[in-house]
Length: 108
Length: 126
Image (cartoon, rainbow over all chains, first blue to last red; front, side):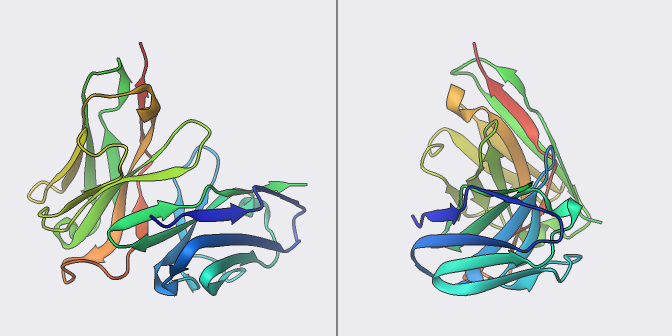
């Protein structure tokens, strides 16, 4: 199975700053099958991006995704108070679905 | 509005069984694959199982293969997960999740999880 490794584990930033989250795959994967989710404390996850860079319905344009092959990035251009949460990348391939271990974006 | 509502969780002893249910509304249930994803306390997300739109194909993560069974009733817009031979490490919130994979694809080339329920807590402890 493809392993996804996210870094950093925790990102401490202030509102208004830029957040850059990394997701690295153990082998090359199709950019069509890389998604990002946001999970706030006490809530279920929410789809943010799919196909590496397409925003899900209702997701603000301060969220963007990029990458290919084994390296993918989620960028939040200007952090809003509601963006402090845990973010997971996820891939699909060969009838297997796997998640990264998550990056927590916390208020500095 | 898409709604996924899990039920059936609780405290259960090791080795026993439990059945989770998920009531679905807001989309044509029979058109889409469905999954269960779990999250152990304080941990990350783990894919558990997926069932195809028609229910004729099922997929499991290795740690639950042979112990859990996913199923669906398209006439009742319901998804199920039968959990047998439960272990302490199965303790988690179990989320009912809608896949993007739809019935036009025998096997998906592209897939992700576009809607999530609030989850149902399963605690395995003596």
